[in-house]
Image (cartoon, rainbow, N blue to C red; front, top):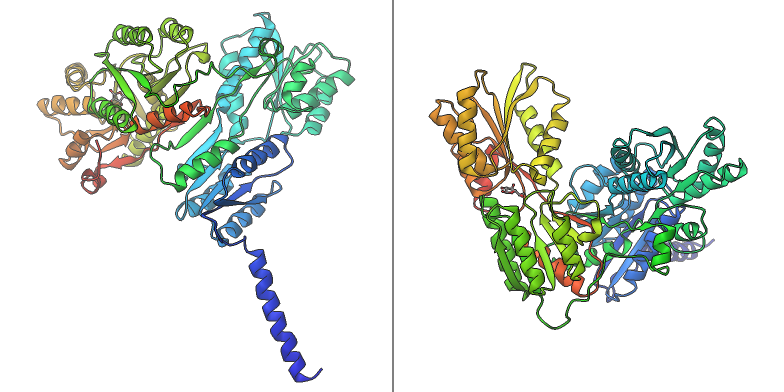
Length: 619
Ligand code: GYE
């Protein structure tokens, strides 16, 4: 072939190749404002197909953005490739539903260092992402346990559990929740747990084998509806129609869990919102740098039983939705715990300034650290017909009656900062605050890292208000980590009620009483730690030097004490919940369903960082 022609062909080939790669590139941004990448784990599970459809439906509402979808077909290595390819397209934000939480953690961290990342369903390890959205898996397990105890009406019974993917967070947490409830019913036994990887056929095969060796099986609890349906088929073939079967997902459609309950195949299931729609909504909030975006969001499951379907004529019962007055200013009633700490003062300020900024009228009541005052405040809000009630419950128990009155008055209730222990969770709409268990874990992790020793370490714990969720959960997190370090022992644990004065008084008594050398103090908040430091100094100790001190809140006073060398570390608990609360109320006003729980982003501040951060601290 003549040289010129060859040249022409080669030039055309190069142009074609460039064009092809340009085509391979995601349609570039002509007229587009945002390019979003959505990396899905697989498109075989009905629930994941639903998730992707939700993202598509929500995305279709906006013309200024485009989504690029990838399907990893359940391969972790392929998903890692997908993520890199999406980054090559120059996306502005990534949504990812990981195949494997552990394996995907490093690549998600890498992406997060460049652009916002929303993680859906299976959380990656740590907190290197913008927002996690997922079902509350532990709660799904607990609710499953609740249905089993209802079905068995306190009669003795046997349960076969069918688990999803072994070791995956949803599987572990659903099992944990189930066992937490059944542990309170010793006459109900889990006879076995089988793994079926979320797949119907695998469940059918394994149950067919298993029920041969379990003659008296009462209930099968499957961690998703597909496996529950598989179990039902196996039971039917084996002529074991009497076994009650419970699933999770509650998808609509002819083969979805709702239909399986309607047909009497399942005794119950739970909706398990995929988060696809929320991911898109929050993706836009992140891209527009909106305020008040939480770190973690857990979506509300709804129980589906034949009774629920009968009562609700097929429309699932979302907690009573009250239409808020469009256009008229919203009236919010807020009942606060008190003003016991720097944290609380900052929290009150945040609520008040955010309400003013959002144009929301606020009735604010200070409970002065007494539950009856908060209850009286809520009753006054009901009388004044406020549109929304929000409160920070000083303790976990004793709220059923007043919250039932609020429900009776049709007023939605949002909990901020602390939680309540209620059987009927339809009495509250949403919770926003911190992960107190994780705060306790962080305090312990810092302490064992700081005092790297095999020698005995004697710790004093100053607890917060008794029966309050932060006190209960911080102790759970702290002791959970210490389990792996038996030489770290809590030798005294008493409540200082979250106040500086009480921190001082209680520490003083412990020092007078305690003959053993105290190596460390874990205080549930900075204020108690500062009181304890004063008591230690009066007793001739060197707080921060011969006694290691870790506390929680990361308030101003703690930073000062760290700079003075008297406190060694403070774990952040973010009091600035005002913007989040007002955003939630506005979202609710516009008809959006609110997540069940919204968890704030927080850090850890060892003393050596105090000088750097002090100037930037907002509280
Ligand atoms: O740690 C403490 C306050 O409920 C998280 O209450 C809050 C706690 C906070 O008294 O300082």
